[in-house]
Image 1: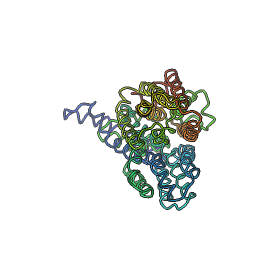
Image 2: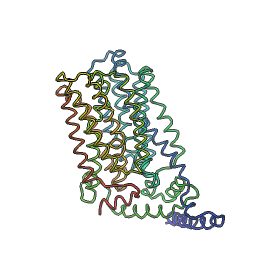
Image 3: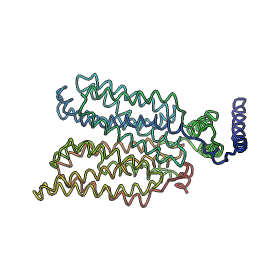
Length: 478
């Protein structure tokens, strides 16, 4: 009781200070509103540190494409052995998705990022020292685990530390850095050896691990754990020394007190009526994001260009640059245009990109308009990746980080991320089989799935722009 009373007294003193400080500053001709806003520099820096994990994610995803021929040649791997190496990444990511949420809830968001970094470091070192397929696969599995954990904890951490008016753009930086990591590895993978490229993968992990010592833990997680003093200190640090955090702190604490009365969530609890709509939104967006074909196209884009009769190196570099540029534009727009409009524009572009690519392969198969085939294929693929980057790539992760109540966020976020990674594996595994069945039919199938996404977003997905996490969850469950 003595400890509790001391915490309460400190809390009251903190709130009292929050009231007095603006009055004192007002005497110096500063307004209450200006004081209240503070300076969220620490929130920006914390986001930068966290998205080093997103960049590490991208380096893992972008590693296999430029290194395929060199690794197969140096280690005498068969195509089947290299296929295992490439695809086992997604199995590791699925495990990371399953366990990343509970780990983040148990040891904190920073602890989960440290764990993910440790797996990535171990994975890169195993790949670097590999002399055969087994160490190579073990390293790939470990780095995949880190990817899966990062894919959950980074957007969650950013959403929980960001001011509501900046949450969309700050969370969208997660996808921007993933795309940047993929693109940079695509490009430098043509210059560096595969072992040197593996060592380069240690750099973002080192930056992240160092930066975690300098940033605060998620205030919402601290509040959930009952660490009131640390919660207020972290929130004050994130909002700036001069910010009045009393209103935001009270809202978070009131919401968490309500949630604490609820029993601890399990996977089956996600299908209760109170959580079902949020689960449908989160899982549905992940399904459409992956089954629309993105990983098949990313993993085999060079092959697609080659089959269409276009230079794979020029096409791949153009693809990589476009992906980063458009994702950066999307990050700037997500808090202005809103989540829902960006996803809808993205889905329409994905349909058109798939149809253009389908037409190009149809013409090739039937020996029609041969000169138009490369132009249509390149236009279709670039339109596809540009459209994906403007909305469907980043925004589902932003929405997923916003819609789940904190008492089920670990379980629900882990489940949605698991679905995402299962979709990534399914699409990347089946892509070559589908292309063998029908090259143009493959892209017609993806076009149909992306068309279904349009109706799903219109009918089910809410707009979350400019709302606090607590307001979003109240609206979903109303």
